[in-house]
Image 1 (tube, rainbow, N blue to C red):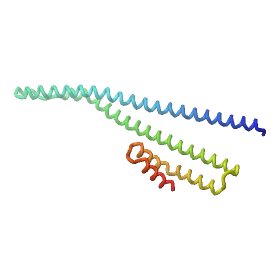
Image 2 (image 1 turned 90 degrees about the vertical axis):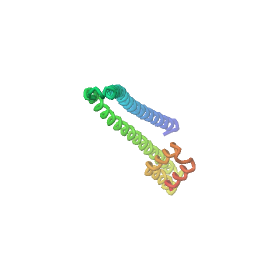
Image 3 (image 1 turned 180 degrees about the vertical axis):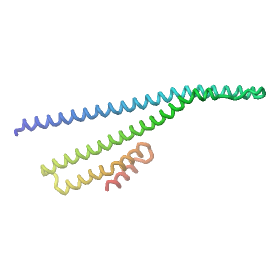
Image 4 (image 1 turned 30 degrees about the horizontal axis):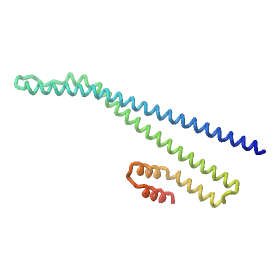
Length: 187
């Protein structure tokens, strides 16, 4: 294989890699957008029902004030009709709360799965690089094993490292504490 063929093959490989990455990113963004849209729709429905219920609660309050004002006249405080009208909305509100909680959990799980997949892809990429370097005699078997073990340890401790990153993002720990915790895990 001459130099031109090698260059052509490398260019094709890079092009295919870029194409695959672009498709994956596009699909990922599409899924995230769809999930967020569904969640926003559920929250909007809940907000609309909440407004209706607040109106009913205000009506109950008015009836109660009227009752208190007319207490001496023997008027009975009856809001059963209002509460009966509210029941479907209250049931729908409870259902929406469940759907929102499920959607939130699904979004969190999907985000975690994406992060886990990204960590696996980083490991696979690092392994591929190390395999190539070993094949080309750029690194020794000992260096290869050492670097591969470090990459594997990063992947194996993905969850702990992710939590440490979140602590830093939330301002719970400082940058130096983050670095120390990460170093301790990767030892």
